[in-house]
Amino acid sequence: MKSLIETIVEPLVDHPEAVVVSEQEEDNKVVYHLGVHADDVGKVIGKNGRIAKSIRTVVYAAGMKSNKKIYLDIM
Image (tube, rainbow, N blue to C red; front, side):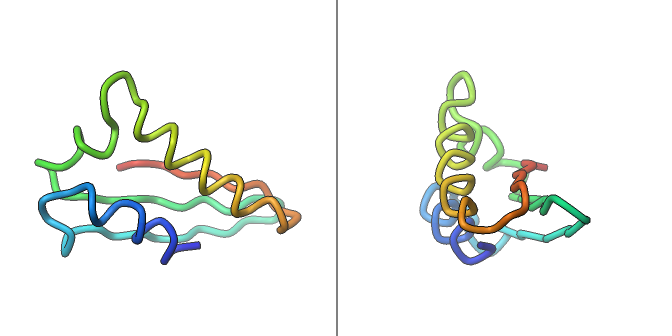
């Protein structure tokens, strides 16, 4: 899942080397924290959060086969 998030986000940003995805697993959920360069935050979020919503939709759909709930936080 981490590589999927990186694959989606890296082409969107100007500083792909600064993209960091960390994973925090709990009993019934997995939280992914996406960190990007300060200049690229707006590009990842998009107008009215459209790009962020699209990224979350793809990640949630990919995580449907696991029994845990998937969350994506953009830092």
